[in-house]
Image (cartoon, rainbow, N blue to C red; front, side, top):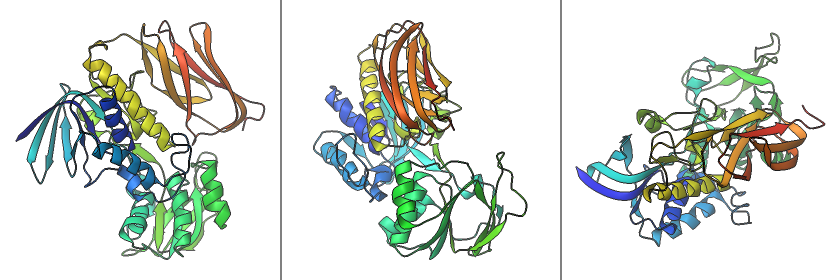
Length: 419
């Protein structure tokens, strides 16, 4: 078994992991290692050839591949160790990583601090519970994206998209440009799951219909998909009898949500949040296990890659504090409490007695116009901002100055046109 000893080990070489590794070096870390299961760095950005990335960070529109390359270039010009094509099998609570690859066999990595940046994965057909067989031609939006953008393969000629997640919306446009006939996007919820800009740029601009409160109820075909049955649903997502409609297609694209990839976290005994499906974090982005931090979509599914990179940097700064002994092994915590229309807040807790600037990320429960975000610590109001429009798909971020003397309540007050 090959052994390594590093100051900081980053699991995952996507935008969160790369940003974390670079920030750790910037903060003075000696040995930093990125462990990536793919053959190269970049994560999901390798197959994102559309633009819209980097607007916050670089103030310009970039393709996902361009955004990733900025970080890859910086890593290649640094002394950061990179283990690609390497699968992590286990992370222990005393910060030992067991991994394997075809060069070294089994690998043991002992780290002063670990940053989890494994990203997320798509929900699959088996998690949607649609009646029928599982024939060829039922694919996730990410799989279709990889087939077209990287493999150069068209997986069908007539497509139906289930779910209005951002990847599905982007692929509706991409498939149309490749002359795949997109029959429509069908969303079981009453409002879209993706960003408004993607609804406009990927569906409206190309005349692709979006059917809300509608879902796929049956897949037809045994060896190859031949069509699907769609139907309207009521407010409780129950199928409305008599609304069924058969649509002929040879491709069903699933864009029905993302799940943070936390199998390693669970095995390490890290506490997870039932709402975000990621680790419970403090304002240093440290998990419930001392010395193990989390960033990016493994912590919470973000909408913008800019936030993903930012979270990696927060985790790296936290990891460096831990290495320097500036974080207590068992700190006392205060809570961030979502209230009003706020669904969740990350980080979920704050180190008691820590007076510092803290970045908060949150999503709302339902769409609203003219809403007001108010953050309070104890009896004091520490932040206030008005928003012309808020919606569940769009992550909201704000920076607050906390004194560490009381729980922080984060409230999105309803506006004049709640709905």
